[in-house]
Image (cartoon, rainbow, N blue to C red):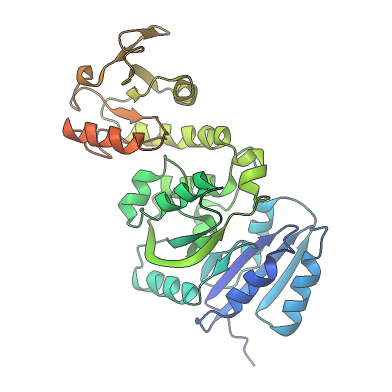
Length: 341
């Protein structure tokens, strides 16, 4: 008798996830899609995670445990990919929840759009919006990026998709590689690398995942997910993008001139990008020089025929304000400027 190969392989790395993995697995087992497997990769947990996985596997053959030593989430994810049998791979975290139609809707989108390599979805924020306001704003921002153009042009602000919300073609791992272990967020690096290779990513407009934000989430406690780590890996791929798309390469005009902005923009110089000038709205900075570079008022910056603008200000509302001003001056997103913070 032939063994039926599932269309979808869900890969769920788990480390000391006893507090949330049960509800996460239950939400997957309640999916409306008829053909999937769940590869639960226990990354050497020291709590009850392995026992809970075993209990679910005993009750439902779709749950497939993989028990590893503690090697990190990138290695756990790659181990799951290696064991996957499905044409499509869905990523899932052990502390989040899937809505019932997630797998069905995402698989249908990939089947109906053969040029799309990865599809994510909008997500619901599963935390305290007051106590975790910054993370909530990030979730709200990612939910605004649904088209392939939005995702591609928003990638240098932050990760434009929620990692546990994605489904992609398994063949992409063979073509462009899986997760890498390093001093950077492995998911963001992987999406930047795939986008750099031309992988088309889209996002469904429905909320199909609850993205929880527990206090011990890796993005809160692991230095590989610190803002500095994000900007280090971002600089590498942003420099590659600028070399291909900036008509004034290697020069850029940096919007913002504060210490944090300069520190992050300076990372680009390691890849041959030259900062032509800074632009600021603070009258105390305008007209001064920083390391020999002028700080210009907005009205004094050259037009798009003379420079490429790189907004590097991350304060609330600043990105939108800068974009509105640049567009009023004839700058077009993706052609004359791209946000990087």
